[in-house]
Image (cartoon, rainbow, N blue to C red; front, side, top):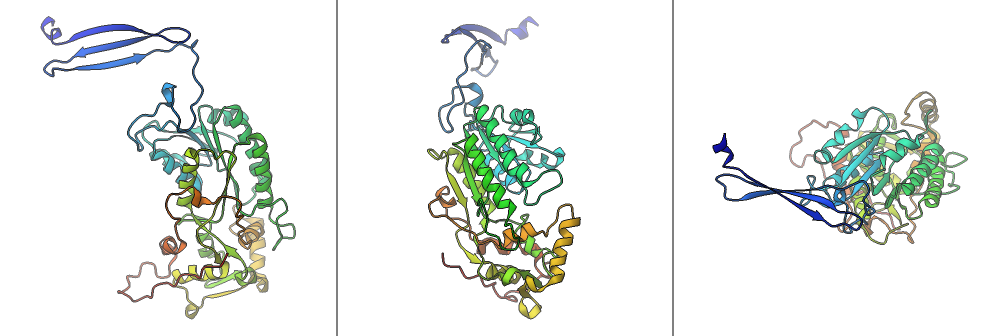
Length: 423
Protein backbone atom coordinates (compact mmCIF):
# COMPACT_ATOMS: atom_id res chain seq x y z
CA UNK A 1 0.00 0.00 0.00
CA UNK A 2 2.79 2.40 0.95
CA UNK A 3 4.74 1.51 -2.19
CA UNK A 4 1.77 2.25 -4.44
CA UNK A 5 1.25 5.59 -2.78
CA UNK A 6 4.82 6.57 -3.57
CA UNK A 7 3.89 6.78 -7.22
CA UNK A 8 1.51 9.68 -6.52
CA UNK A 9 2.54 13.03 -5.09
CA UNK A 10 -0.23 15.40 -4.16
CA UNK A 11 0.42 19.02 -3.44
CA UNK A 12 -2.30 21.28 -2.21
CA UNK A 13 -1.62 24.92 -2.70
CA UNK A 14 -4.03 27.54 -1.40
CA UNK A 15 -3.97 31.01 -2.85
CA UNK A 16 -6.19 33.98 -2.25
CA UNK A 17 -7.87 35.70 -5.13
CA UNK A 18 -8.49 39.31 -4.27
CA UNK A 19 -11.94 40.67 -5.07
CA UNK A 20 -13.37 44.17 -4.78
CA UNK A 21 -15.42 43.19 -1.72
CA UNK A 22 -13.93 39.99 -0.30
CA UNK A 23 -11.45 37.23 -1.06
CA UNK A 24 -12.63 33.98 -2.61
CA UNK A 25 -10.17 31.11 -2.00
CA UNK A 26 -8.86 29.31 -5.04
CA UNK A 27 -7.73 25.72 -4.57
CA UNK A 28 -5.07 24.42 -6.93
CA UNK A 29 -4.47 20.68 -6.95
CA UNK A 30 -1.37 19.33 -8.65
CA UNK A 31 -1.33 15.58 -9.08
CA UNK A 32 1.85 13.91 -10.26
CA UNK A 33 1.10 10.90 -12.45
CA UNK A 34 3.59 8.02 -12.54
CA UNK A 35 5.52 7.16 -15.71
CA UNK A 36 4.29 10.25 -17.55
CA UNK A 37 6.72 12.90 -16.39
CA UNK A 38 4.13 15.69 -16.29
CA UNK A 39 1.39 16.97 -14.00
CA UNK A 40 -2.32 17.66 -14.42
CA UNK A 41 -3.49 20.94 -12.92
CA UNK A 42 -7.06 21.44 -11.72
CA UNK A 43 -8.24 24.88 -10.60
CA UNK A 44 -11.50 25.39 -8.76
CA UNK A 45 -12.84 28.87 -8.00
CA UNK A 46 -15.45 29.26 -5.25
CA UNK A 47 -17.62 32.34 -5.09
CA UNK A 48 -19.90 33.49 -2.30
CA UNK A 49 -23.47 34.72 -2.40
CA UNK A 50 -22.37 38.05 -0.91
CA UNK A 51 -20.24 38.85 -3.96
CA UNK A 52 -21.52 41.15 -6.69
CA UNK A 53 -21.84 39.54 -10.10
CA UNK A 54 -21.57 41.79 -13.17
CA UNK A 55 -24.60 42.09 -15.40
CA UNK A 56 -24.90 40.13 -18.66
CA UNK A 57 -22.32 41.25 -21.20
CA UNK A 58 -23.41 42.77 -24.49
CA UNK A 59 -23.93 40.30 -27.29
CA UNK A 60 -20.55 39.81 -28.88
CA UNK A 61 -18.81 41.63 -26.01
CA UNK A 62 -16.44 40.38 -23.32
CA UNK A 63 -18.04 38.13 -20.73
CA UNK A 64 -16.97 38.31 -17.09
CA UNK A 65 -19.46 35.92 -15.49
CA UNK A 66 -18.14 32.35 -15.50
CA UNK A 67 -21.38 30.97 -16.93
CA UNK A 68 -21.29 33.44 -19.86
CA UNK A 69 -17.66 32.92 -20.86
CA UNK A 70 -17.25 31.54 -24.34
CA UNK A 71 -15.95 27.99 -24.42
CA UNK A 72 -14.72 25.74 -27.17
CA UNK A 73 -13.57 26.36 -30.72
CA UNK A 74 -17.02 26.71 -32.27
CA UNK A 75 -19.78 24.32 -33.26
CA UNK A 76 -22.49 22.51 -31.34
CA UNK A 77 -20.11 21.33 -28.59
CA UNK A 78 -18.99 24.87 -27.71
CA UNK A 79 -20.69 27.83 -26.01
CA UNK A 80 -20.74 31.25 -27.65
CA UNK A 81 -22.05 33.19 -24.63
CA UNK A 82 -25.64 33.49 -25.89
CA UNK A 83 -28.53 31.98 -23.97
CA UNK A 84 -31.62 32.20 -26.16
CA UNK A 85 -35.24 31.47 -25.27
CA UNK A 86 -37.22 30.60 -28.39
CA UNK A 87 -40.98 30.76 -27.92
CA UNK A 88 -42.67 28.74 -30.64
CA UNK A 89 -39.58 26.63 -31.22
CA UNK A 90 -41.63 23.57 -32.13
CA UNK A 91 -43.20 25.33 -35.11
CA UNK A 92 -42.22 25.49 -38.76
CA UNK A 93 -39.76 28.40 -38.51
CA UNK A 94 -38.74 27.64 -34.92
CA UNK A 95 -37.01 24.36 -35.75
CA UNK A 96 -34.84 26.07 -38.38
CA UNK A 97 -33.86 28.89 -36.01
CA UNK A 98 -33.07 26.41 -33.22
CA UNK A 99 -30.80 24.47 -35.56
CA UNK A 100 -28.97 27.59 -36.76
CA UNK A 101 -28.45 28.79 -33.20
CA UNK A 102 -27.43 25.38 -31.91
CA UNK A 103 -24.72 24.77 -34.47
CA UNK A 104 -22.83 27.91 -33.43
CA UNK A 105 -22.83 27.01 -29.74
CA UNK A 106 -25.91 28.81 -28.43
CA UNK A 107 -27.58 27.46 -25.32
CA UNK A 108 -31.27 27.06 -26.12
CA UNK A 109 -34.26 27.21 -23.82
CA UNK A 110 -37.31 25.92 -25.69
CA UNK A 111 -40.64 26.51 -23.90
CA UNK A 112 -43.44 24.15 -24.86
CA UNK A 113 -47.17 24.25 -24.23
CA UNK A 114 -48.53 20.81 -25.06
CA UNK A 115 -46.81 17.44 -24.85
CA UNK A 116 -43.05 17.48 -24.72
CA UNK A 117 -42.87 14.85 -27.48
CA UNK A 118 -43.61 17.51 -30.10
CA UNK A 119 -40.41 19.40 -29.29
CA UNK A 120 -38.02 16.74 -28.00
CA UNK A 121 -36.66 16.16 -31.50
CA UNK A 122 -34.87 19.52 -31.19
CA UNK A 123 -32.64 18.09 -28.46
CA UNK A 124 -30.07 17.20 -31.11
CA UNK A 125 -29.67 20.86 -32.12
CA UNK A 126 -26.96 21.19 -29.46
CA UNK A 127 -24.61 19.11 -27.37
CA UNK A 128 -25.51 17.55 -24.03
CA UNK A 129 -26.91 20.21 -21.70
CA UNK A 130 -27.15 22.89 -24.39
CA UNK A 131 -30.85 22.41 -25.24
CA UNK A 132 -33.29 22.73 -22.35
CA UNK A 133 -37.09 22.48 -22.27
CA UNK A 134 -39.49 24.43 -20.07
CA UNK A 135 -43.27 24.07 -19.85
CA UNK A 136 -45.18 27.34 -20.05
CA UNK A 137 -48.57 28.87 -20.64
CA UNK A 138 -49.01 32.09 -22.58
CA UNK A 139 -51.41 33.43 -19.94
CA UNK A 140 -49.17 32.48 -16.99
CA UNK A 141 -46.60 35.21 -16.32
CA UNK A 142 -44.69 33.10 -13.78
CA UNK A 143 -43.95 30.37 -16.34
CA UNK A 144 -43.03 32.99 -18.96
CA UNK A 145 -40.61 34.75 -16.62
CA UNK A 146 -39.07 31.45 -15.60
CA UNK A 147 -38.44 30.55 -19.25
CA UNK A 148 -36.41 33.72 -19.89
CA UNK A 149 -34.88 34.19 -16.42
CA UNK A 150 -31.31 33.37 -17.51
CA UNK A 151 -31.52 34.42 -21.17
CA UNK A 152 -29.93 37.38 -22.87
CA UNK A 153 -31.86 36.80 -26.13
CA UNK A 154 -35.59 36.09 -26.50
CA UNK A 155 -37.25 35.21 -29.82
CA UNK A 156 -41.05 35.27 -30.02
CA UNK A 157 -42.40 33.10 -32.84
CA UNK A 158 -45.77 32.39 -31.26
CA UNK A 159 -48.60 32.81 -33.72
CA UNK A 160 -51.33 31.02 -35.59
CA UNK A 161 -52.87 31.59 -38.99
CA UNK A 162 -56.30 30.55 -37.74
CA UNK A 163 -58.25 31.31 -34.57
CA UNK A 164 -59.05 28.42 -32.25
CA UNK A 165 -61.50 27.96 -29.40
CA UNK A 166 -58.63 28.45 -26.92
CA UNK A 167 -56.86 31.44 -28.45
CA UNK A 168 -58.01 34.28 -30.67
CA UNK A 169 -55.74 36.43 -32.83
CA UNK A 170 -55.91 39.21 -30.27
CA UNK A 171 -54.93 36.94 -27.37
CA UNK A 172 -51.90 35.54 -29.19
CA UNK A 173 -50.65 38.37 -31.41
CA UNK A 174 -51.41 41.28 -29.06
CA UNK A 175 -51.82 40.31 -25.42
CA UNK A 176 -49.37 37.42 -25.55
CA UNK A 177 -46.75 39.44 -27.42
CA UNK A 178 -47.14 42.36 -25.00
CA UNK A 179 -46.75 40.04 -22.02
CA UNK A 180 -43.55 38.48 -23.38
CA UNK A 181 -42.07 41.88 -24.25
CA UNK A 182 -42.76 43.31 -20.79
CA UNK A 183 -41.36 40.32 -18.94
CA UNK A 184 -38.30 40.28 -21.21
CA UNK A 185 -37.59 43.90 -20.31
CA UNK A 186 -38.06 43.20 -16.60
CA UNK A 187 -35.77 40.16 -16.81
CA UNK A 188 -32.93 42.21 -18.29
CA UNK A 189 -32.99 40.59 -21.74
CA UNK A 190 -30.63 42.36 -24.12
CA UNK A 191 -32.27 41.50 -27.44
CA UNK A 192 -35.90 40.71 -28.17
CA UNK A 193 -36.80 39.50 -31.66
CA UNK A 194 -40.51 39.61 -32.44
CA UNK A 195 -42.07 38.06 -35.54
CA UNK A 196 -44.92 39.92 -37.20
CA UNK A 197 -46.04 39.54 -40.84
CA UNK A 198 -45.71 41.32 -44.14
CA UNK A 199 -48.68 43.46 -45.23
CA UNK A 200 -49.66 44.34 -41.65
CA UNK A 201 -51.92 47.36 -41.38
CA UNK A 202 -54.25 48.96 -38.89
CA UNK A 203 -57.10 48.71 -41.39
CA UNK A 204 -56.16 46.12 -44.03
CA UNK A 205 -57.64 46.56 -47.48
CA UNK A 206 -60.57 44.11 -47.90
CA UNK A 207 -60.46 41.70 -50.82
CA UNK A 208 -62.80 38.80 -50.06
CA UNK A 209 -63.90 39.54 -46.50
CA UNK A 210 -65.74 42.86 -46.09
CA UNK A 211 -63.77 43.69 -42.93
CA UNK A 212 -60.36 42.70 -44.26
CA UNK A 213 -57.87 40.36 -42.62
CA UNK A 214 -58.07 40.08 -38.83
CA UNK A 215 -54.65 38.40 -38.92
CA UNK A 216 -52.94 41.45 -40.44
CA UNK A 217 -54.77 43.85 -38.11
CA UNK A 218 -53.81 41.89 -34.97
CA UNK A 219 -50.20 41.58 -36.11
CA UNK A 220 -50.02 45.34 -36.65
CA UNK A 221 -51.41 46.00 -33.18
CA UNK A 222 -48.97 43.47 -31.76
CA UNK A 223 -46.06 45.47 -33.17
CA UNK A 224 -47.32 48.62 -31.46
CA UNK A 225 -47.61 47.06 -27.99
CA UNK A 226 -44.21 45.35 -28.32
CA UNK A 227 -42.63 48.70 -29.19
CA UNK A 228 -44.26 50.26 -26.12
CA UNK A 229 -42.98 47.57 -23.75
CA UNK A 230 -39.57 46.96 -25.37
CA UNK A 231 -38.58 49.92 -27.63
CA UNK A 232 -35.32 48.24 -28.73
CA UNK A 233 -37.13 45.12 -30.00
CA UNK A 234 -36.18 43.86 -33.47
CA UNK A 235 -39.21 43.04 -35.62
CA UNK A 236 -39.28 40.69 -38.60
CA UNK A 237 -42.04 40.86 -41.20
CA UNK A 238 -41.84 37.65 -43.25
CA UNK A 239 -43.73 36.96 -46.44
CA UNK A 240 -44.89 33.44 -47.35
CA UNK A 241 -42.11 31.07 -46.27
CA UNK A 242 -41.64 27.81 -48.15
CA UNK A 243 -40.08 24.41 -47.56
CA UNK A 244 -41.46 20.89 -47.87
CA UNK A 245 -43.26 21.13 -44.48
CA UNK A 246 -44.68 24.61 -45.05
CA UNK A 247 -48.19 25.96 -45.47
CA UNK A 248 -47.51 27.60 -48.82
CA UNK A 249 -46.40 25.00 -51.37
CA UNK A 250 -48.19 22.15 -49.63
CA UNK A 251 -51.27 24.36 -49.33
CA UNK A 252 -51.68 24.63 -53.11
CA UNK A 253 -50.70 21.00 -53.66
CA UNK A 254 -53.25 19.70 -51.15
CA UNK A 255 -56.31 18.02 -52.63
CA UNK A 256 -58.59 20.09 -50.37
CA UNK A 257 -57.36 23.32 -51.98
CA UNK A 258 -57.84 22.18 -55.58
CA UNK A 259 -60.44 20.30 -57.55
CA UNK A 260 -58.33 17.45 -58.87
CA UNK A 261 -56.33 19.26 -61.58
CA UNK A 262 -58.35 22.47 -61.37
CA UNK A 263 -57.20 25.25 -59.06
CA UNK A 264 -59.59 28.09 -58.09
CA UNK A 265 -58.06 31.53 -57.46
CA UNK A 266 -59.60 34.93 -56.87
CA UNK A 267 -59.83 36.58 -60.31
CA UNK A 268 -57.69 33.69 -61.59
CA UNK A 269 -54.72 35.07 -59.63
CA UNK A 270 -54.26 38.01 -62.01
CA UNK A 271 -52.90 41.27 -60.60
CA UNK A 272 -51.81 39.63 -57.31
CA UNK A 273 -48.06 39.59 -56.64
CA UNK A 274 -46.10 37.48 -54.19
CA UNK A 275 -42.51 37.48 -53.00
CA UNK A 276 -42.01 34.14 -51.17
CA UNK A 277 -38.87 33.53 -49.14
CA UNK A 278 -36.99 30.35 -48.26
CA UNK A 279 -37.32 29.59 -44.55
CA UNK A 280 -33.62 28.76 -44.22
CA UNK A 281 -32.72 32.31 -45.27
CA UNK A 282 -35.04 33.74 -42.62
CA UNK A 283 -33.43 31.57 -39.92
CA UNK A 284 -29.93 32.70 -40.89
CA UNK A 285 -31.10 36.30 -40.91
CA UNK A 286 -32.42 35.98 -37.35
CA UNK A 287 -29.08 34.61 -36.14
CA UNK A 288 -27.19 37.42 -37.85
CA UNK A 289 -29.55 39.99 -36.33
CA UNK A 290 -28.60 38.76 -32.85
CA UNK A 291 -24.94 39.60 -33.43
CA UNK A 292 -25.56 42.69 -35.54
CA UNK A 293 -24.55 45.91 -33.82
CA UNK A 294 -26.59 49.10 -33.79
CA UNK A 295 -29.82 47.51 -34.98
CA UNK A 296 -31.92 48.18 -31.88
CA UNK A 297 -35.50 48.93 -32.84
CA UNK A 298 -35.02 47.84 -36.46
CA UNK A 299 -37.78 46.33 -38.60
CA UNK A 300 -36.71 43.85 -41.27
CA UNK A 301 -38.85 42.70 -44.18
CA UNK A 302 -38.10 39.03 -44.79
CA UNK A 303 -38.98 38.69 -48.46
CA UNK A 304 -37.51 36.67 -51.30
CA UNK A 305 -35.22 38.08 -54.01
CA UNK A 306 -37.84 37.94 -56.80
CA UNK A 307 -41.45 38.96 -57.26
CA UNK A 308 -44.01 36.85 -59.15
CA UNK A 309 -47.63 37.15 -60.17
CA UNK A 310 -49.69 34.61 -58.23
CA UNK A 311 -51.19 33.20 -61.44
CA UNK A 312 -47.75 32.51 -62.93
CA UNK A 313 -46.42 31.15 -59.64
CA UNK A 314 -49.25 28.64 -59.25
CA UNK A 315 -48.88 27.55 -62.88
CA UNK A 316 -45.20 26.92 -62.20
CA UNK A 317 -46.01 24.79 -59.15
CA UNK A 318 -48.36 22.60 -61.17
CA UNK A 319 -45.84 22.26 -63.99
CA UNK A 320 -43.38 20.90 -61.44
CA UNK A 321 -46.05 18.45 -60.27
CA UNK A 322 -46.45 17.36 -63.93
CA UNK A 323 -49.99 18.67 -64.23
CA UNK A 324 -50.05 20.45 -67.58
CA UNK A 325 -53.10 21.83 -69.44
CA UNK A 326 -52.91 18.80 -71.73
CA UNK A 327 -53.40 16.66 -68.60
CA UNK A 328 -56.48 18.62 -67.55
CA UNK A 329 -54.88 21.43 -65.50
CA UNK A 330 -57.02 24.56 -65.32
CA UNK A 331 -56.73 27.75 -63.27
CA UNK A 332 -60.11 29.48 -62.97
CA UNK A 333 -61.96 32.20 -61.04
CA UNK A 334 -63.23 30.91 -57.70
CA UNK A 335 -66.10 33.40 -57.77
CA UNK A 336 -67.70 31.23 -60.44
CA UNK A 337 -67.55 28.05 -58.37
CA UNK A 338 -70.27 27.98 -55.67
CA UNK A 339 -69.32 24.41 -54.71
CA UNK A 340 -65.81 25.51 -53.78
CA UNK A 341 -67.13 28.47 -51.78
CA UNK A 342 -69.49 26.12 -49.94
CA UNK A 343 -66.55 23.81 -49.22
CA UNK A 344 -64.68 26.72 -47.64
CA UNK A 345 -67.62 27.54 -45.40
CA UNK A 346 -68.14 23.94 -44.28
CA UNK A 347 -64.44 23.40 -43.69
CA UNK A 348 -64.22 26.51 -41.55
CA UNK A 349 -67.28 25.62 -39.49
CA UNK A 350 -66.67 21.95 -38.76
CA UNK A 351 -62.91 21.37 -38.98
CA UNK A 352 -60.78 21.79 -35.86
CA UNK A 353 -57.79 23.01 -37.86
CA UNK A 354 -59.26 24.02 -41.23
CA UNK A 355 -57.02 24.13 -44.26
CA UNK A 356 -59.58 26.30 -46.03
CA UNK A 357 -60.96 29.42 -44.38
CA UNK A 358 -62.04 32.88 -45.45
CA UNK A 359 -59.17 34.37 -43.46
CA UNK A 360 -56.65 32.20 -45.30
CA UNK A 361 -58.10 33.10 -48.68
CA UNK A 362 -58.01 36.79 -47.75
CA UNK A 363 -54.28 36.68 -46.99
CA UNK A 364 -53.55 34.42 -49.95
CA UNK A 365 -54.87 36.99 -52.43
CA UNK A 366 -53.26 40.04 -50.84
CA UNK A 367 -50.39 41.50 -52.82
CA UNK A 368 -47.08 41.63 -50.93
CA UNK A 369 -46.20 45.27 -50.30
CA UNK A 370 -42.52 45.92 -49.67
CA UNK A 371 -41.70 49.28 -48.10
CA UNK A 372 -38.41 50.46 -49.52
CA UNK A 373 -37.65 52.66 -46.53
CA UNK A 374 -37.29 49.52 -44.38
CA UNK A 375 -34.34 47.08 -44.70
CA UNK A 376 -34.88 43.63 -46.17
CA UNK A 377 -33.32 40.27 -45.43
CA UNK A 378 -30.49 40.92 -47.90
CA UNK A 379 -28.94 43.38 -45.45
CA UNK A 380 -28.44 40.60 -42.88
CA UNK A 381 -27.03 37.94 -45.21
CA UNK A 382 -23.55 37.80 -46.68
CA UNK A 383 -24.70 35.53 -49.53
CA UNK A 384 -27.49 35.97 -52.11
CA UNK A 385 -30.98 34.86 -51.15
CA UNK A 386 -32.25 31.49 -52.35
CA UNK A 387 -34.20 31.61 -55.60
CA UNK A 388 -37.61 29.97 -55.75
CA UNK A 389 -36.65 28.33 -59.05
CA UNK A 390 -33.81 26.52 -57.27
CA UNK A 391 -35.94 25.15 -54.42
CA UNK A 392 -39.47 24.58 -55.72
CA UNK A 393 -38.62 21.48 -57.82
CA UNK A 394 -37.08 19.79 -54.79
CA UNK A 395 -39.77 20.81 -52.30
CA UNK A 396 -42.63 19.73 -54.58
CA UNK A 397 -41.05 16.44 -55.63
CA UNK A 398 -43.23 14.53 -53.19
CA UNK A 399 -46.38 15.93 -54.82
CA UNK A 400 -45.31 15.17 -58.38
CA UNK A 401 -47.60 13.02 -60.48
CA UNK A 402 -46.16 9.51 -60.80
CA UNK A 403 -43.52 10.45 -58.25
CA UNK A 404 -42.09 6.91 -58.12
CA UNK A 405 -41.80 6.54 -61.88
CA UNK A 406 -38.19 6.25 -63.03
CA UNK A 407 -38.05 8.26 -66.27
CA UNK A 408 -35.52 7.90 -69.04
CA UNK A 409 -32.96 10.61 -69.64
CA UNK A 410 -34.60 13.71 -71.14
CA UNK A 411 -38.01 12.03 -71.16
CA UNK A 412 -39.49 15.09 -69.47
CA UNK A 413 -38.62 18.61 -70.49
CA UNK A 414 -37.04 20.99 -68.03
CA UNK A 415 -39.74 22.89 -66.16
CA UNK A 416 -40.02 26.44 -67.42
CA UNK A 417 -39.59 28.97 -64.55
CA UNK A 418 -42.20 31.69 -63.98
CA UNK A 419 -41.58 35.19 -65.35
CA UNK A 420 -40.33 37.70 -62.82
CA UNK A 421 -42.70 40.60 -62.22
CA UNK A 422 -41.41 44.15 -62.40
CA UNK A 423 -41.24 46.08 -59.12
